[in-house]
Length: 395
Image 1 (cartoon, rainbow, N blue to C red):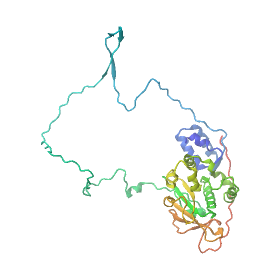
Image 2: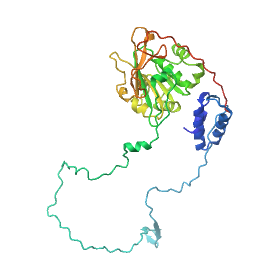
Image 3: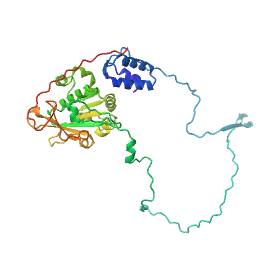
Image 4: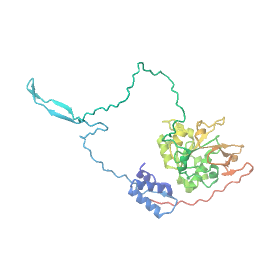
């Protein structure tokens, strides 16, 4: 995506200061002076961490001058040049006295002086009277070990890793969910995938809403691919008003089933956001029919530096529906437990988490806090006050 296209996509979106700086750096590299001037002015005049962009006029790419090439000139690539000359011979008369021109093709071949072979006084090699023929399917035994100590050019040792800079950027948030998930890293290659499986009606979608709110407060832009509940439904809007602050509405992009047509549409959404939430992976597999959607190939290794949450339905025998390989490919595997018939007691626990050293940590969905096995009552958490978002217009 070019700088002009990314700039035009800022219209009617809430963008963090970091994203503006990244786009400015790209515009400087591509020498897009119009974009550079507008973004530098915005950052210089305002110190806010996020902006609600409204473009009064979108930019169009400038036409580049293309050098004209004569259509009569054709150059062959990677072919040896051959110089031909046409020699005109005398006219000969045939039949009805019609003159005919005979063309002969000649080659200009460079003449090199003859080189005499140098003969060394070496003993003659005797010819074998009966040469040995190779036997089919004959197994060749390897030579003795320890003869060479060569290292392959692409091979690395543990000592080479000391010179590799460690990735220090994480998705850590100073919230209860941040304590539960731990310091999930932003990978330089590939992305981190978090799976969540639970029985129906256990509160897994509410957990996604709470996680989106926590990361929006940290300045992370998210995309929510909601395939179970349509965004225009009353249930969806009720959850939004309950868990998402109004100041964070612009930080979360909502995608319904009719907004995705191809796998490339999904990749473009992942590239434009920091975090993705997919509800659910089984519905996504049915929606994108051009490929056989796999968690590791088409999500985890398809983009770099992203955090992807994906919901899986749990079957009656306690397995993840449509996610046999996901239990091995995911970096973090979460599941919702229902210890009683009261939904307020439901909690999320990590069956696998590479980024949290605390074992068996539990997060209660209803009370939105870390719980201890010894606790009997958990008071409701009051929502914190949020600051209003300032609105700016790029002219």
